[in-house]
Amino acid sequence: MPILWLVLAVLVLSGGLLVQTHSRAITAAEYATIDTLSRSLLVYRSAAAEFAKANPVFVGNPTDAALNLPGWFRKPTGISSYVIGGQSYTYYPDGPGGLLDALASATESELVGVKRSGRLVSPRSASIGIALPAVIPEGAIVALN
Image (tube, rainbow, N blue to C red; front, side, top):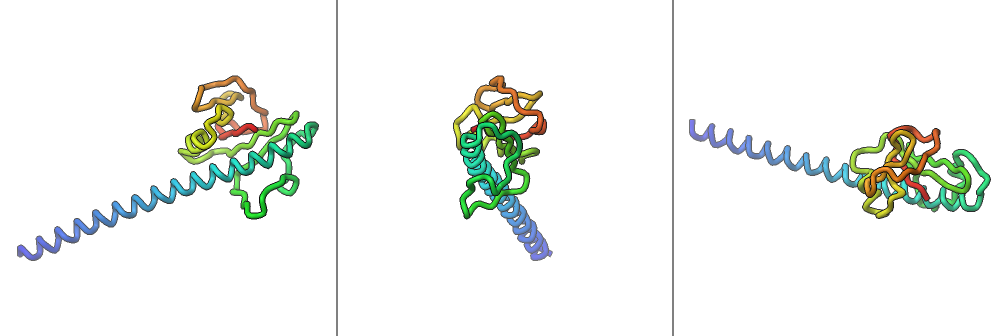
């Protein structure tokens, strides 16, 4: 009977270690996804900013072909940009938790935030009063050029 308890204890411990390892793997995958998405959004923002600067009278969503994106770049689904008056707004609706913090850390800018009540709310300085175009969905993560 004591051997049965020993086997049961080993099984419980190994099961606990397996669950812990699985949890760490999921967390690492989530961090990698957020990091990749934040860097992709910044690459796309740079291309949209160049386009807006070169086409100050353009209004609307530029096509990916119109943007000068690097050849290696693969745009994640959901990233969009809107250009008006020489200003570009790159956004990602319904971003995963942590994306806004990753962007704010990478840019150290107040021009990265979330759209709340039509305005940009930055994690660095709360509402900075910049009105965002209506085409950008409420709650979207936004990066201005």
